[in-house]
Image (cartoon, rainbow, N blue to C red; front, top):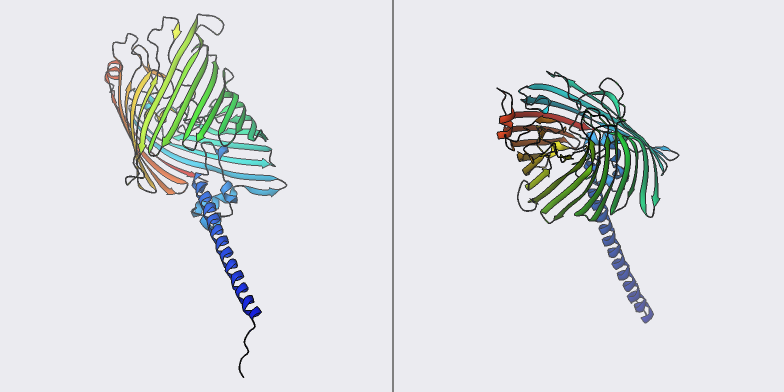
Length: 504
């Protein structure tokens, strides 16, 4: 049987169907491309909120929101320990209650030669430090939060009494209530209780993580945050350290201030701050000062830079005269930092990063002129900027520092830093990282050359949140140190340490 020929309408219908099929295929291809682009964007978002960056400089700033990211299962790079301990983060209890638990354990060994107590005093010391931090964070709906953190810091095997920053037994490090909301598109928080403070590059305000006990304050703080701005204001009292008792607050020291950060873009920022410190001390003298400062940091390609400066003014009563009597001295002091460097990570193997920094903090060249010119470093992290041996603080100092970091392996980072230290005023003292005067020549005849220091560290990421660090530092005393030392006491010092830190 001869097959029949399809009429023209059937041929037209076939052409229409083919056209429709082509359009459907094109739409499907477009949707697939859009889906792939969306998946790529989501993967990039996951990469930006890496689980390894979950911990902040303070535990109350930890950000574990990546756990709720829908693309996490496909892009999860956490190791077994991180996965298991993260089960204790952001636990939904229902009714708007969200709770997190975590902490840190750190074991550190010190071998100090000629600088026990961070002084060039001819004494040696070798010992172990152990620190355990545990925190709980409870969010109640969108507007309420309660945060608590305990610290237990202990010292073993010291030849001398532990430093004030080395030992405290089960003390409250952070404990506050917080109210949160939104004002003009900015996140608002009002916080009251014990809390750590960390601002800028930590030159003047830091929790002092190097110290075994860390630093915190009692009082209130308010803050506003947006994509471009952070603004904080506070009024607090420093927490005292009492090894065998619950730490109280120092009622004789009041610290208030405001700190604002403007992020011009991802690579440029500007900080502005005003700080007020009022100390009443019968032995050291009453002192009330204002510190006004600014900091700018930026990066363009591999080039990066930083500038920070601050001016202090106020008044101080002479030591030993009492708070209500004695001559009143004017305070006029300042500090300045400038740094410039280049990151060769895109150009060279081992990702070299090289920088040169200059630091200055004023000293007092005439104690009888009715004016105090020695800069008060407030509550700093001096350890990060003036050498690991902690012989130098941000008071009466000029320092030139050359720093190099290398990463020969993704889990290994090497750092080297060379420092040259001098007194800004030869008549003023050399102050250590804690701000204590350790050497002085009132006549200035010993000159201003303090010495040089070399610091070397190696950090190994054993696991994502377990790190082993080894460090060695050597200090060579200059003319000032040699001339002001006791007979038979060397002006040189050395320091070796190793520490193992695990976060959970």
